[in-house]
Length: 68
Image (tube, rainbow, N blue to C red):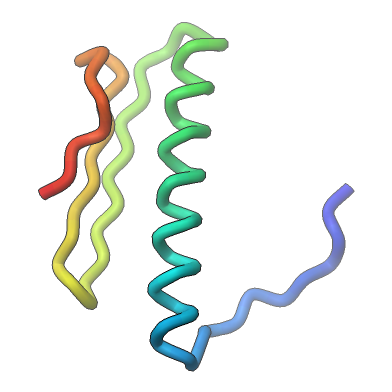
């Protein structure tokens, strides 16, 4: 079971960037795993307005995640 944790805005900019990057990587890993184990098509786009980065993953392409 998951522990009860509160989701709050991270005030410290450095920690917020680090947390975002780590969670973005984990989302991509989970999307890839889900597409493999369930044989389904996954489309994931993560856009971060602070630095304008966009990461896209499409399981139908059988390609690695792309950064723009």
